[in-house]
Image (cartoon, rainbow, N blue to C red; front, side):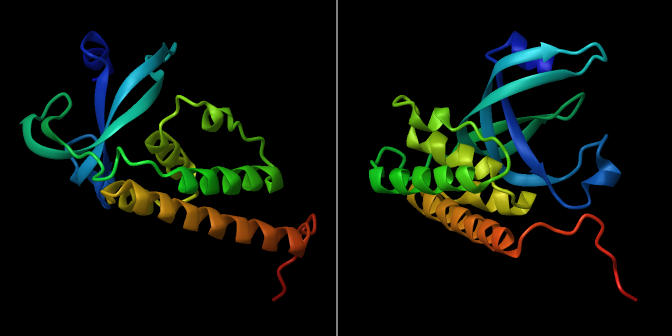
Length: 185
C-alpha cells in the first residue's frame, strides 16, 4: 500500500476500524464511513521491511464503493470539507493557542508548539493537530473528525483542553504519588 501511494501522488486515506476488528485484522474488517485523506510528506524505510511515515492531513473524506479488496482496499472517496473552512476564527485560534501554551507550561512533557506560531499554518491544521494529540479514545477522535463545522470542532477541542488543564491542575494540587503505594486489604 505504501509503495503504491509513493509511486502515485503520495495520497493515502485513513479510516478508523470498528470495534471487534481484531479477529478480522488481516482480512477486511469493518471501518467507519468517514476518514481523512493525507499526503505522505516523508518516509523512512526500516531494516525489518516496515517504514516510518509522516502524513499531512488534507481533508475529511467519506468512503464510498470499494473498488479493490486485496492486497489493500481502494475506495471511491467523497471530499467532505468543513462548511465554514474559509471563515476567520482569530478569537478561537488565540484562545486555543493560549490554552495549549498554558497546558505545555504545566505539563511534565516537553511540547514543541512552533507550528502553532507559523503564520502560514492554517487554522484547520492547528485545530486538527491539537485534536489529534488530545488524550482521547479513538471513537472520541472520530467524533471530532465527523464534525463538519470547523468552528464547532475548535470549540470542542477547547473544551477538551480545558478539561485536561483542570485534570493537570488537580493532579498538581494532589502532589506526587508515594514511591510504592500500598493497597490495603
